[in-house]
Length: 126
Image 1 (cartoon, helix red, strand yellow):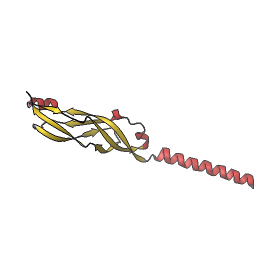
Image 2 (image 1 turned 90 degrees about the horizontal axis):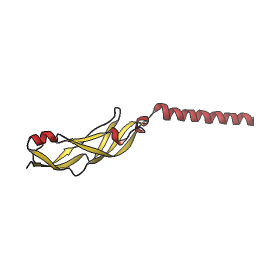
Image 3 (image 1 turned 180 degrees about the vertical axis):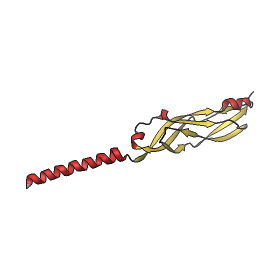
Image 4 (image 1 turned 90 degrees about the vertical axis):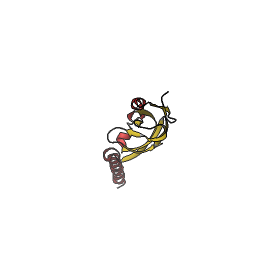
């Protein structure tokens, strides 16, 4: 009888480990993660200069992201997998806030960008 209980206990533990592995590896739940210090590129500078304008300054050059994806995808992500940029084409002279746009790998959703916009100063070319 005692031997039978030990065998049942061993079988129960093996089944529990098997179920746990199935949930972690096969079901692959969606999770969130932070991606720190993604560099921000500035596009549209040539068009701005063609209009006789240029950027005086862009104070912040990195953003932090919160992303969502399958856990198996999150463990593979790196900062370099994301491109953050602001488009300054068509801006007028003066201070303005420009929304940060982000592209990333397929299957990864960007939940938040901080800061969501960058303040830029556009001045006339001298």
